[in-house]
Length: 383
Image 1 (cartoon, rainbow, N blue to C red):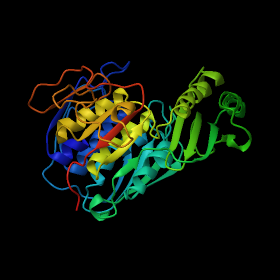
Image 2 (tube, rainbow, N blue to C red):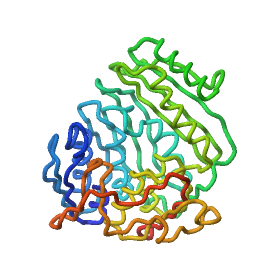
Image 3 (cartoon, rainbow, N blue to C red):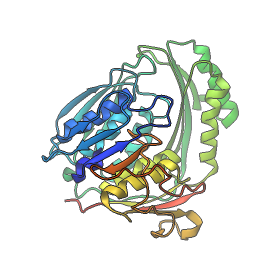
């Protein structure tokens, strides 16, 4: 949606979330696409709950900044909505503030803490001016959470914007675990905290079990963070009904252990999140623990809208010294390959320019299990 609005290219998305138990647009996806359309003055067709096909025609006017409020009306992810409108607000005509109401900590979505502690600090070091605040927690199914964000357009950040260079973690700066419950027995958090202490050998005040008092419904989250000089890795697992402490906390500990066993600074989830702001900004280079399907999907969608060759990646060992160009022949995604949307579309969706044939839903790129070096060239010159 954002790329369509920024480039003026109409887009049709088919087979939206086709392989999910409940196909089509969920409420958070619907609010996200409607928010993008309202910000850009575009026209939507098919924007309804459970819709499996969506067409968007961008508006002719520039994106107007201002104060915006979006209420999902459920526990749908507020961060998904923010990530949809953020690229647009980076190209608005003035600074903007956004208030979003819904779920702040959701399964299969980046939680507030990931954006606040992992994603935004990296953009801030590159000169982006984005602020985010947690006003109130919101868990499934009650929702009612709230975040606010402030965004300064890139045109007002030049010349402070610099390429992102994240090739090493740097010195260790500590680790922590926060195991929290809302409107649930404290013993749930205490049991999960015990699992974390044993599995990761984190001791003392590094592991805390806390009670969240501002949520309107029950909720449980295990939040693990490993802090380094240049990056903070955030791993979050949301507790689910009938899932044991060992299952919930153990899942997060296993993911954190995999990250700590590697040496690349950028984790699996951060890798695909960085691509769009980097290509819209001034590019850069980073090392990631792996190239996931979400990662290759994002590359393919970006290339379909902005042209091929902007993002290249390859196995860490294959490119020699960290930071060298992987070259378009090593793991890069061809622009004519199929796009599988990992955002509003979800796995199983296909994207095509409106009026043309929809792309097939085959995997768009080559996922790589080991560490990769990623090089991103900017879409266009800022300023």
